[in-house]
Length: 50
Image (cartoon, rainbow, N blue to C red):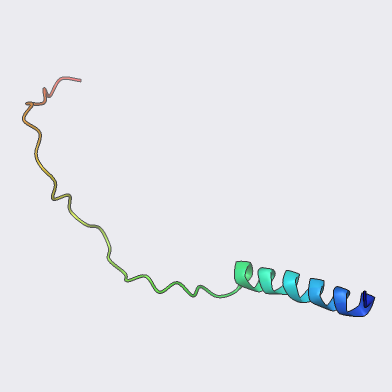
């Protein structure tokens, strides 16, 4: 094994992980905000006394 190459590969692997963790946000999710619930309503009546 070539020790300098192994050390270089390990440093590259760790620095790549640190860049992904602490780098800028690269998420490409759409900004949706709050979404209303559009499911089925319950058939039970809820009592107002807790």
